[in-house]
Length: 125
Image (cartoon, rainbow, N blue to C red; front, side):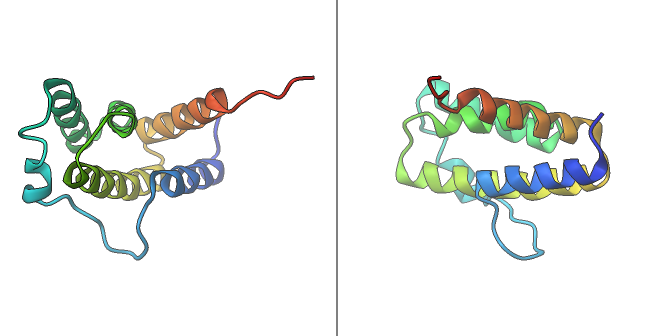
């Protein structure tokens, strides 16, 4: 079982990886930023909507996966900026949820750690 301290450290690592901003304020994606996805290709728009809906529902695992998927897609500059703002806001909320020992937030952090480990190149022996 993951300890609260380990979870907080992991959340910090995830936040840094997601590009969390500095300060105690909570970032928020503006309506204008969100609207940059209105004219996006269907797959991009659907993934964005899934990420935002999951984030609003505190479905941290689904939100993290959708945000990671968006990072791999071809986005316009305004869409990339909106994605970065959403990732920053999500990271801040995720860290707060981990601090409160939210099981879903802890699971999202654990999934992220596993994903990071699985995606690292393996060295030949």
